[in-house]
Image (cartoon, rainbow, N blue to C red; front, top):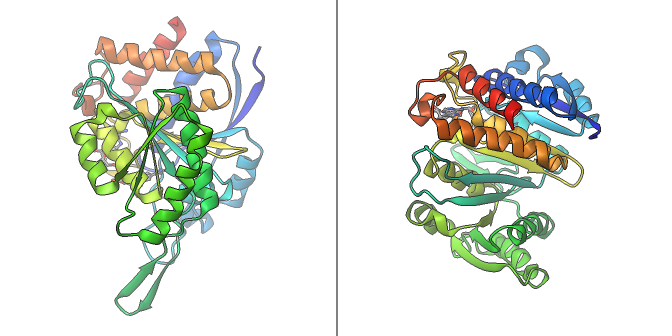
Length: 341
Ligand code: NAD
């Protein structure tokens, strides 16, 4: 009998409420058909909060997160004007030291991908690098953004990547731009290399970020775990998601020592808000990643199997996958399958 988990749910902006509601529907099917127990605790965060609270991450939400085992987060619109609060996701990642952003990408049955046998995970450093949030104008028209790279954060993310690789195909690729960003890249590279003796079973190689964007198109099937710094990881995980079919299928986990936040890789896609046409799968699979993180492997695998079965049957595919199903139709199909596994 599993214990009852407290899960914070932040629906977010744009298509966020649609994809989160769809995921909750799948979880309801899981709760009805297994002994899993979850108390969902809904909180407010996102662009829409700024007018109401003057911030996109209200204090009340921060204390809610602190009282929960993990967070399921919908996509949020990022404020872009100077002086506006930084992305709520970035704030949460830093606040809870969620140092590893884990983004699996794989080929699915009946989904057009560049290759049929892709199965890779991008592990992105999640708390510093180009997303440190330190930017200023040196003089009118001259801006500076700081790329902070520390040995400590690099070691934490590298360790997470080695552990994953050693449980999978035992191949780790670290990605950087050491020929140009010599000092900061060296700190990251040295940290990754220093852990290699601890994982002798893992084959380690390296690629420059520009070459990596090309290799992901040319031979994505040859990768297993890819570890890199924040900005590079953000870019190549979107690329890897598209290579395997759609951003609508890509889930992400933000993992720290004591907390985890789970979300789709995609953003709030504002132009599709309220139309019930986007793909809920990325968020549903983020829910499965959350269950794996909590140690609920059996229930996590029920969701994964249900998604694969729905894709295989091909009756309820959303537009991004070449189908005509609505968001709710696709999630209802997944929920129905969850009950049968
Ligand atoms: P986006 O991911 O929201 O959308 C890009 C395109 O991808 C969409 O136009 C659509 O064609 C496709 N897409 C995305 N999600 C889909 C889904 N579930 N099903 C089918 N197709 C889907 O990226 P954007 O337009 O660059 O960003 C919109 C907003 O989201 C911005 O404010 C951005 O900063 C924010 N964002 C937030 C997060 C996050 O909360 N973690 C992540 C990325 C972007």
